[in-house]
Image (cartoon, rainbow, N blue to C red; front, side, top):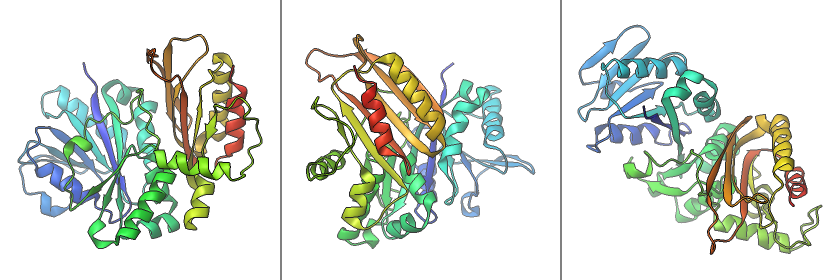
Length: 353
């Protein structure tokens, strides 16, 4: 039986998560959704109540979507929905989980990998983060939760751009890209975002696409060319790395605890050395690693190796064959809190053949 895809919808207080969700629940998009919310506004509970007791409330919307308010553990909520679906009591093909504005999406994402029953029935499709263009800078300055929500994102939707100046929008966009260079950023007005940009995008799954914002890499390469001294030898001429935290502080005056850096090399990795290094890296720095993902060139392999993780949970898979006209290049991005970038870069280079 196919796994049920799940989307985590996050964003800071007032960013517009509920506005977006309400629009999705009312639009005739053809999806049958089950939505798990912490607080579901009374103004939307105007349809037939299917189930109601002290612990949960399930409401069916006009377009066939289901909204479920559950006070308790997420595992129990998902298990309950799955059991009702299997019994034919509820019908849905996708789950959306809306987190509270002050929450860290990391533990929610980990639920899909740490609980065997959930992993058997559900697949984490993507983490979608809504960011407030008017107040986003201040929120990133004052709240680590806002930085984490941006760092975990597979896609960022920028709301309230009509209430901010173009300079404010550009500055926030640049900052979000430096925090998370792999998440595409698009604008959303009053919840008006294409459903195709939110559901079934497979942003979290292992795949061969590793989008790293080109401006992020270009800015760092320019900064590296102006005398930033890496403590490792680049005589091989094909390894490149990025330090978002350094660039960010210099460019905008905002130093974020959550930041990203990327690594690229056309030299292949030694499999045994890389496995050992990554294993140790995750054991030591796992709690500070929000997201990491890579497409790897391995010595003697004609196929790509894909890997990604959340904190200490890492998954790997074998990708497609390298094509003859395709540049053979390892690309890795790490997003985390106060990560020792040089330790990571030096360790990766020691794993090259």
